[in-house]
Length: 130
Image (spheres, rainbow, N blue to C red):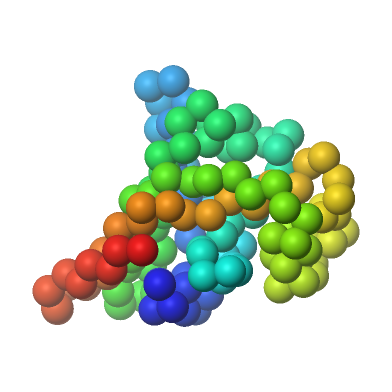
């Protein structure tokens, strides 16, 4: 999982795919956090992405560093604990202008049953499960 975390941090931006009805939705994300042995992302509960995850928590993430790319298939699990939210915001202090660990909007979710595949044009794919 650390290898996946490090890759996503290096890329800075990854793309999260959700489903809205039968329509795929993809958007850039930048938050990735290791907390209590789990990989977390962050969003706001008022956003469409939160509603899409609530209706269908199966997602995919994709990132590219210029040479290799990473795809992750996972199920997102909501964590309403103040501690998980605080840890995310401490690791992304720029979010504190928009979010607070104790507001009704901040949402952190962890990746469950994740299958991460590193790929490139020059090497065989490598799969990591967590």
